Image (cartoon, rainbow, N blue to C red; front, side):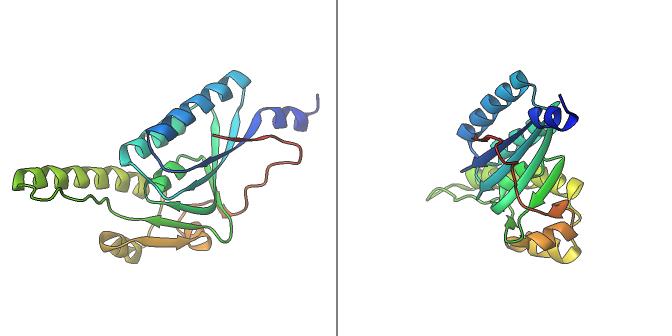
Length: 186
C-alpha cells in the first residue's frame, strides 16, 4: 500500500452544523466513537454554527482538544458565539475567503419581576462563562486592543483574512475533501 493511500485511509472528512447544544455534544461523541473504531488519525471538520450553550461548547472544545486524533477545523460560512470556542479545538484551523467569525460576551434575559438575588445569580453565571471563554480566546488568538474593546461592549466580527492576522485561523483556505472520499455529517 502506498504511503499516500495509507494516509488517506486514516483521514476522514466531516460536516458539523447547527446549534451548539446537548444534541450536538451527543452527535460528536458518537462520531468520535466511530472515528476511533475506524482508526482515524486526522479528522477534517467543517463547522457551520451561530452558537448555542456555553457549557456545551466548552465541553466539545475540551473533548476534541484532548483526543488522540488530529482535529482540523474549517469555517466555510459562519462560526459565531460559542461555536468559535468549538472551532478553536482544531490543531489546525482554516476559513474560506468569504467566511466570517463573531464573538461576543454572554447574555441572558432576566425573568419578569426577578428579585435582586436572582439577578445577581444570573450576572455571576454570565461573568463566569465570559471568563471561561475569554481564557480560551486569549490562549489561541492574539486580538488587538481595539478588538478587545469592541468585544467588551458589542459583537466582534472578523473576516477570514482578519482571522488569519490574529491567529484564529492558520490560513484562508477551503474545506476540500479529496475526490472519492466520503464526507460524513455529524
